[in-house]
Amino acid sequence: MSALAKKLFYSKRFNKLAVRLYSAVNPPPYRRANMEFDYDVWNGICTFHSHDGRQIGENNTNPAIYREVVETEHKICKFEGSRNGLPINVTALRHVMAVWTDALQFTTMLRNDYIRRRGLVGPRLTLRQGYVFSKLGAAYAAYLARKRHNPITSLPALETAFFTLGVGPFMIVRTFMERGDLAVLHDGPLSAAELYEMADSSGTLISAEGKGCAGSKKLILDFVDVTMNGTYDKPLDSVDAQRAVRSIADWDEFYAYVYATSRLELMVRLTQYLCAQSLWALQSRDGLLNGVEQALVSECLAKAYHDPGPGHDARTVMGNFIQIVLALLDEFDFPQVRAVLVNANLVNSGHGGYLIDQVGGDARISAARRIRLATELILPLCKQELDATHRALQRFESETVTLEDLQSRACGPSLTSLLVLLETRPTQHGAPAGVPA
Image 1 (tube, rainbow, N blue to C red):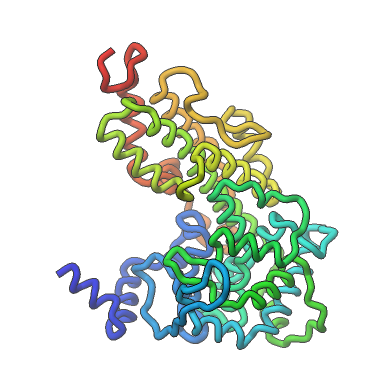
Image 2 (cartoon, rainbow, N blue to C red):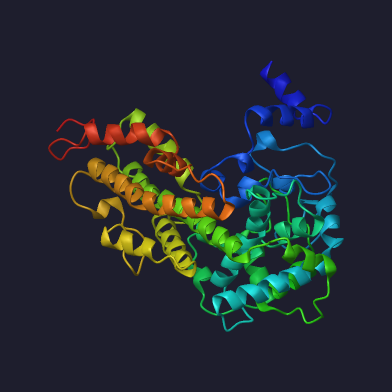
């Protein structure tokens, strides 16, 4: 019966009705008060619809329960590089190409305002600066859909294309972060060719489901060059791009939303990896955990840590990930996160976080204390930025989050039970828990 229900749910005939009925009872993320905390902005808004009735997240729309089955043409990619032989979404590519020149102009208009607001000497952006700029793509759609006054009910074609295209620098940085690669902290601007090579060699152009980015190498190079190096040199006379700019009535309020939501997303990821360091260190010690505890640690670690696969040392990846997140928070003018963690000896100013086995005392209790300390220190800052998010939207002001919410968001619901076990069954007389002293 379960298999049959799932088959019917995802059938072309019944899917849209099923998703709408399910959504009436369980609203999709973009209709929830704390979307920006519970999800990052892209994942939260990706189920929203474009003007043509398609979800703006296309193949990557999630959670999967909200993904609608729509007619989509896929072809096998013949481009050279990492995408060769993978399916690509030709339908989405056609929609982007229909507004290509408008998208280049819209991106350039946003870039010009971004550089002016931040006082950059530009026009070329570093990857960190490009990361901040790329957060405008998803935030633009989310802000217009979720704000209290005159929210949109669907996203126009140009803005949908920008939602798809604008995430490029963010995706490169995220991929390198999850590999613990500090190359993204390079201080100078990079050429479009260098950025393309970074994206292609790291797997950035391939989705989690194994589908390739549909744009040709030339299209990607052209857009990246406009985005990161400001190479568009034609008149900015697109009527549609000018309309899209005017759609944001209050740009100060919009930027407040971009910064608050981006800081919030980074702090959640930071919490995950601070906790993951302690979880990984517990897991790596033989005999320290019993079977139940080991299972809980594995569940929490799977939620908190993205394993980049063979050839990557977990210690290095976690420490470097934390270092990159702190650098990005600095880029978002939010150095207080680093200061709070440094003062608590959870991180130091020059490297990533300390590992649990570098701390004296009982390893189990120390791990639990460090996890609690990390979440307790970051929670007030998360609440502050969630409040700023709600103010920018002018709604949901009464909503907030608790310590349990942050711990569950970072490591899953099993963390609560795990912490209790770690704190109530310490190692006795120096022997690992569960092993006779």
